[in-house]
Length: 477
Image (cartoon, rainbow, N blue to C red; front, side, top):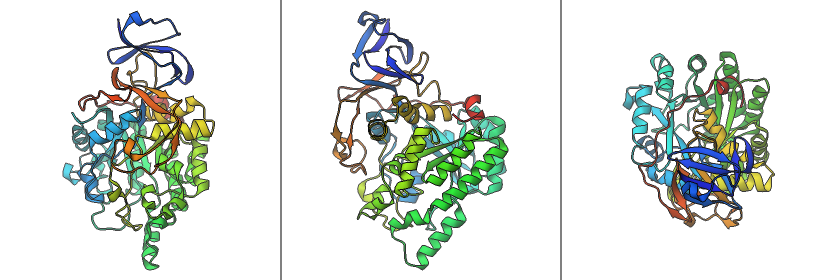
């Protein structure tokens, strides 16, 4: 006897779309069958998904839950694990990746830092989770670089590094690592099987631009695209890509924001290297002109939005496979917090996009631009699961996979408004029309949302132990 059957819908499974019925027992998908093979008598419950689209639960590769290290930078960040994961779930995301900072509080110990970080999620998450390990400048010691193998064994095979610092302001942590450290990390990654995620900007250019902004009294927040510039991303991404090629490491650029960044990634991929790129929904939705609105800082996350031609190239990259992850850089802050910084030095990063990521991506990509539905599923679920070592447990509808399933009602035509959402009091996408919305969401077989009713519990979310496949580490997706 099955616990649940989902039948009648158009199902995206293993890169194909078709009419299949899904059988679930416990936490796992146990059958994907032709219509009519499974009957209502075969299960305790049946959900009719007729005229709807059935996809795997979304995988969000880039979130920052409001723990103390964020508050030290941005002030009081109000949203914790419960808040962010509830919003994710309502939007069809069932797994998210946070960032564990290796800092002095953990004696600069990378393994201890990530283990302590994920303990903060226990009993506080409505969805499944894991964390990247963020090596900040002072923590990038030979001892920590030597822990890459231990991190992989513990189920944390992705490491984030920065090639720049943030604005020269009091209390901002040192984030940047040097080239020698990057080479050493990539050598360890190539040897043992890690994925390196890189915040890639040229620090000399960024810091010079901040200095010139001060000297010329041009410090308004809307000048950030000139400070965190295209040339900075271009030079840095190309440098990082070349180090990855020479060391044999698999890597991806987080929050790619410029057409130059996309081109550098695409060129390496065309040569067969395991180089990839993530972009952010904000960058695909808005451009640098939006910054000039009176509260235009609400459109910001780091590095910055760029021009309209950059925005269009990001979408083209998502269509063609130059970029393979659409993430959000989610941080849960109030409107007051988000708009309190009004200079290029103190404007706050992050955004509240985790709940609307899948509906906006479907509307803008599939409905307006003709992106195949299968490709849409790739960028919001399958590819992040593959690159981060969760596939096929996550990111697909297949026998043996976790029963994380989203039923999308593609007949809706609704406007986004913050009052309908579940994370803080604003959204940059206020008034945007979307053409789909999750009607049912399951997490490992448990019905979490159905008919606009919420059945989740903060103990439902579990940590995912990850291991990246040798195929992903060896060549482009």
